[in-house]
Length: 121
Image 1: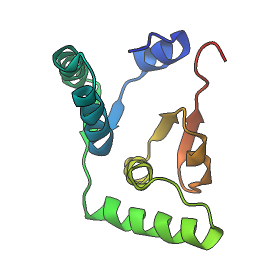
Image 2: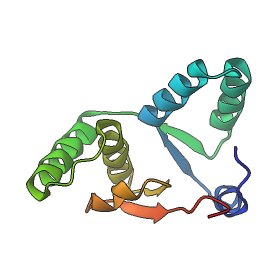
Image 3: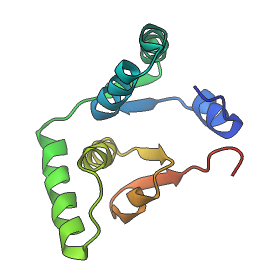
Image 4: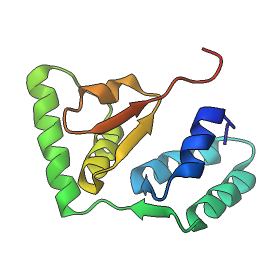
């Protein structure tokens, strides 16, 4: 939605985009805190209706991967936010590469990761 050319190109070329339900919750809580809730909800709904987009829900397999990641992070002393562990576990379960600006995802060993740089940095 920021219109960053690198990300727009990646998304336009993708045959499949997985959207973890945890990310949807984070987005919606941000929308409720902002001034453009309805407009943002409509844009998200339009994005989710795209045929290449699939919502990735938390299931028992994701929960097991979450538990493994939490244990690994504790042993190494590299805690990250709980929601990000759920997001990472969902990506691992889907066999998906996670696109993110958050460098702390690097500490999740099993995850395919594409660390993005915001435009203008």
